[in-house]
Amino acid sequence: MISGLIRNLRTVAAAALCLTAASTAHADTYPSRNITLVLPFAAGSGTDTTTRLISQHLSQALGVPIVIENKAGANGMLAATYVAKAAPDGYTLLVTTNTTHSANPYLLKSLTYDPVKDFTPIARTGDLPFMLVINPEVPAKTVGELVAYGKANPGKLSYASGSSAAIVSGATFAHNAGIDLLHVPYKSSPPALNDVMGGRVSMMFVDILTGLPHVNGNALRALAVTTKDRSPLVPHLPSMQEAGVPDFDITSWQGYFGPAGMPKEIVTRLNTEIRKIIENPEIKAKLATLGMDAFSGTPEQLGTFVNEQLVLWEKLITNAKIEKQ
Image (cartoon, rainbow, N blue to C red):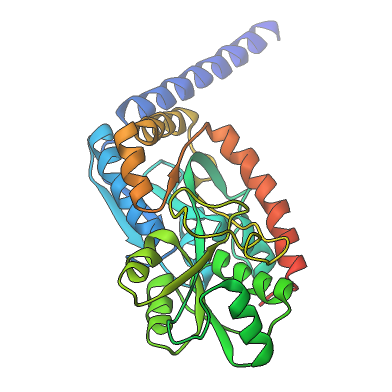
């Protein structure tokens, strides 16, 4: 009986040793083929542009090609669900924002993924501040003038959205300023912005990277940023609160995730390389020109941050009185 027990213990120990060796071997050979970064937004969006810059350096660091796959639609749910169901081997990753991992649980009735249980946090890469832009034909040069025009012309103003930050910002603006705004949703920011410039929609909250070139070209007029304080990226623009809209503080964040159950060694490798890239002064400066406040941290910090943001965005969406769709 004792000899049988000893044999069983030896078998278990040998199995554990094999698993450890396999895990170590897997980590030592990773990556050995292309890595796919899945994005929930279309090409040309802020997340797409910054990810392409970071991925160039990540590809060099890892020694394998990195493929960007844009899966826009359903407010990011298509991309998030796709990665959640992928093999947790480090070859299919999600680069996403508060859209999929903070707001969607409170915006969508039928969510096909869990932002916490279905993903492995890898690294946060920074924030993408948003700003309010309007079609130049709208007779307003300040947020105060826009609010006054909206109150004098109920039902005449509309806002486009291509992300959850744009949806929640628009609804928060309408609620906190006491004006009537028609919401016109789009799959992503570029086509939404095109309709604002074309005069088919009055305004939009958009990331600085996507909107600023059109503002500089006079196709759009920028009025304010959505953050509590002014952004160093566009220091001439007031914050929405400074412009007279109370309790307005909305920031879009960005991070890398994998499917749940990724090996710790692979997560550590990816986190280490991404942080080196983000902390490189030249790359950080380049990302700033693209409208991104770049910084990073550990996988554990990103996991904690996601849980905190779920609480925050539930409050934002509840306060704006947005109903689940």
